Amino acid sequence: MLVVMEAHADAAKIEAVCAEIRAMGYVPHPMPGPTRTAIGITGNRGPVEQATRLQRMPGVAQLIRVTAPYKLVSREFHEGDTLVQVGQVVFGGPAVTVIAGPCTVETREQTLTIAHAVREAGATMLRGGAFKPRTSPYAFHGLGEEGLRILAEAREATGMPVVTEVMDVETLPMVCEYADMLQIGARNMQNYPLLRAVGRSGRPVLLKRGFAATVKDLLLAAEYVLNEGNADVVLCERGIRTFDDTLRFTLDLGAVPMIKQLSHLPVIVDPSHASGRWDQVLPMARAAIAAGADGLIVEVHHNPAFALCDGQQSLVPDRFVAMMEQVARIANAMERPMVL
Image (cartoon, rainbow, N blue to C red; front, side, top):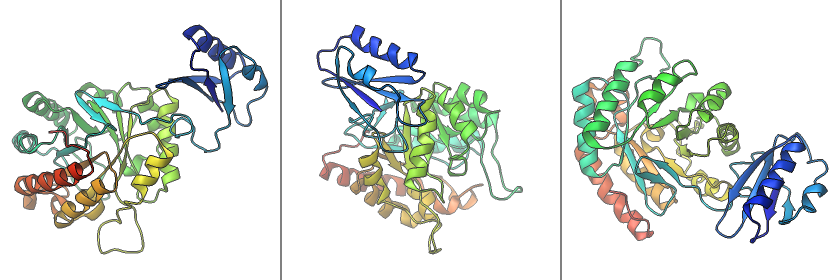
């Protein structure tokens, strides 16, 4: 349920309603808006009992029943777009943001070379895996804390905030020491203990859609994070598994405007993982921005033939420059300037 306060309701009246909600055994979530404050209610397993008590309180304009299974992430709870800030980078505003970097941190030289290249081309955040979930137990699984230290050095050298994947609750504190933003990968989208833990971490979260997950599944996964008090969540469409095996996955670009209609959270697209081929990244990146995505996350490698992970889907720096130039034209046509 959503309690909509009157436009003139002051802080004392809002707190009084929150106190009454707590007394009823539920959790209030005040959400200030441009003209009035709304208070979301969670913790109820059915209709809110004795809701008329709230209706009669001073400053309450109306009660709205939220019908979606996800509450805190829904437009019903929060009508305006949420802006997620990571350092100086903002997701969800008018501008388009690009995250770029290697699939995985291999060496210090490799990571710094790529970081400088993508920063010069206009990327504003650096991606790179220190812990890598791999299908095969014999594949390269990342450098661990050494990789995190290299990412931190790259941040100092370029000024770009770092997003990196966290795989489990055990390594979360270590990753939080180095990362500016925590990535939950597709395989962990429904790892509920991890979602709860990152919700309590105090770090912004990049939540990727699982490759067998519906849009509803993705939004409910985000609900776990917001329910722990962390509203700084960016959703990522990265392709789903379908009957067609021409590409690595099927990029569901229709999900982008649908998610933005259902939820107030920012949405970005990963054309690298979706296609699995470097030659498909550029057209999919253009299409993602045209579909209304708030940004991109792209894999770049200066020598992809020798990459330890996903070289076949990584752009070389020159092609990344070309992608940035073309995407900027699409963004400008939609009156969404690139953040450079």
